[in-house]
Length: 119
Image (tube, rainbow, N blue to C red; front, side, top):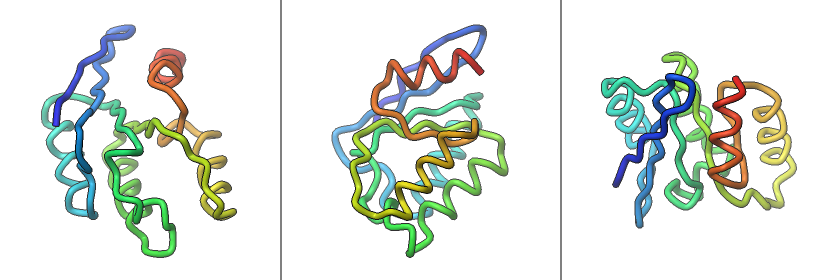
Protein backbone atom coordinates (compact mmCIF):
# COMPACT_ATOMS: atom_id res chain seq x y z
CA UNK A 1 0.00 0.00 0.00
CA UNK A 2 1.23 3.47 -0.87
CA UNK A 3 -0.13 6.82 0.26
CA UNK A 4 0.24 9.75 -2.12
CA UNK A 5 -0.43 13.16 -0.62
CA UNK A 6 -2.20 15.86 -2.60
CA UNK A 7 -2.27 19.41 -1.25
CA UNK A 8 -5.16 21.59 -2.31
CA UNK A 9 -6.17 24.83 -0.56
CA UNK A 10 -4.21 23.90 2.60
CA UNK A 11 -5.87 20.48 2.66
CA UNK A 12 -3.86 17.27 2.71
CA UNK A 13 -5.63 14.52 0.83
CA UNK A 14 -4.48 10.89 1.04
CA UNK A 15 -4.67 8.91 -2.19
CA UNK A 16 -4.31 5.25 -1.28
CA UNK A 17 -2.96 2.98 -4.00
CA UNK A 18 -2.01 -0.69 -4.07
CA UNK A 19 -1.73 -3.61 -6.43
CA UNK A 20 -3.92 -5.77 -4.20
CA UNK A 21 -7.14 -5.51 -2.22
CA UNK A 22 -6.68 -3.27 0.82
CA UNK A 23 -10.15 -3.54 2.31
CA UNK A 24 -11.27 -7.17 2.57
CA UNK A 25 -13.54 -6.75 5.58
CA UNK A 26 -14.81 -4.25 8.14
CA UNK A 27 -11.63 -4.44 10.24
CA UNK A 28 -9.45 -3.56 7.24
CA UNK A 29 -11.60 -0.50 6.60
CA UNK A 30 -11.34 0.60 10.23
CA UNK A 31 -7.56 0.03 10.24
CA UNK A 32 -7.17 2.18 7.14
CA UNK A 33 -9.35 4.89 8.65
CA UNK A 34 -7.41 4.90 11.92
CA UNK A 35 -4.03 4.85 10.21
CA UNK A 36 -4.81 7.83 7.98
CA UNK A 37 -6.70 9.72 10.69
CA UNK A 38 -3.68 9.61 13.00
CA UNK A 39 -1.47 10.80 10.16
CA UNK A 40 -3.63 13.93 10.00
CA UNK A 41 -5.68 13.24 6.89
CA UNK A 42 -9.35 14.14 6.85
CA UNK A 43 -9.89 13.43 3.17
CA UNK A 44 -9.16 10.06 1.60
CA UNK A 45 -9.28 8.68 -1.92
CA UNK A 46 -9.26 4.92 -2.48
CA UNK A 47 -9.83 2.91 -5.64
CA UNK A 48 -12.70 0.51 -6.20
CA UNK A 49 -10.23 -2.18 -7.32
CA UNK A 50 -8.65 -2.09 -3.83
CA UNK A 51 -11.94 -2.85 -2.08
CA UNK A 52 -13.48 -6.32 -1.86
CA UNK A 53 -16.47 -6.82 -4.18
CA UNK A 54 -18.43 -7.77 -1.04
CA UNK A 55 -18.34 -4.07 -0.07
CA UNK A 56 -20.62 -3.35 -3.03
CA UNK A 57 -23.18 -5.97 -1.96
CA UNK A 58 -25.21 -3.80 0.37
CA UNK A 59 -27.04 -6.75 1.96
CA UNK A 60 -24.01 -7.89 3.97
CA UNK A 61 -23.52 -4.53 5.70
CA UNK A 62 -19.78 -4.10 5.07
CA UNK A 63 -20.21 -0.79 3.25
CA UNK A 64 -22.63 0.58 5.84
CA UNK A 65 -20.41 -0.32 8.77
CA UNK A 66 -17.24 1.13 7.23
CA UNK A 67 -18.86 4.29 5.88
CA UNK A 68 -20.55 4.96 9.23
CA UNK A 69 -17.12 5.04 10.90
CA UNK A 70 -15.81 7.49 8.28
CA UNK A 71 -18.86 9.64 8.97
CA UNK A 72 -18.42 9.43 12.76
CA UNK A 73 -14.82 10.64 12.49
CA UNK A 74 -15.79 13.24 9.88
CA UNK A 75 -13.33 11.79 7.39
CA UNK A 76 -14.45 12.48 3.84
CA UNK A 77 -14.02 9.56 1.45
CA UNK A 78 -14.07 9.28 -2.31
CA UNK A 79 -14.00 5.89 -3.99
CA UNK A 80 -12.69 6.11 -7.57
CA UNK A 81 -13.74 3.51 -10.09
CA UNK A 82 -16.20 2.21 -12.64
CA UNK A 83 -19.49 1.75 -10.86
CA UNK A 84 -21.44 -0.04 -13.56
CA UNK A 85 -23.42 -2.35 -11.32
CA UNK A 86 -26.71 -4.05 -12.02
CA UNK A 87 -28.08 -3.70 -8.50
CA UNK A 88 -30.64 -0.91 -8.39
CA UNK A 89 -30.16 -0.51 -4.64
CA UNK A 90 -26.41 0.05 -5.15
CA UNK A 91 -27.05 2.52 -7.97
CA UNK A 92 -29.45 4.40 -5.68
CA UNK A 93 -26.93 4.31 -2.82
CA UNK A 94 -24.17 5.74 -5.03
CA UNK A 95 -26.54 8.40 -6.40
CA UNK A 96 -27.58 9.50 -2.90
CA UNK A 97 -23.98 9.47 -1.65
CA UNK A 98 -22.86 11.63 -4.55
CA UNK A 99 -25.50 14.23 -3.65
CA UNK A 100 -23.78 14.69 -0.28
CA UNK A 101 -20.24 15.53 0.75
CA UNK A 102 -19.22 12.77 3.17
CA UNK A 103 -18.81 9.83 0.78
CA UNK A 104 -18.66 10.03 -3.00
CA UNK A 105 -18.15 7.54 -5.83
CA UNK A 106 -16.46 9.13 -8.83
CA UNK A 107 -14.93 7.84 -12.08
CA UNK A 108 -11.48 9.48 -11.99
CA UNK A 109 -8.83 10.83 -9.64
CA UNK A 110 -9.21 14.21 -11.34
CA UNK A 111 -12.92 14.24 -10.48
CA UNK A 112 -12.07 13.31 -6.89
CA UNK A 113 -9.50 16.06 -6.46
CA UNK A 114 -11.88 18.59 -8.04
CA UNK A 115 -14.66 17.54 -5.65
CA UNK A 116 -12.38 18.02 -2.64
CA UNK A 117 -11.09 21.37 -3.91
CA UNK A 118 -14.62 22.73 -4.39
CA UNK A 119 -15.90 21.87 -0.93
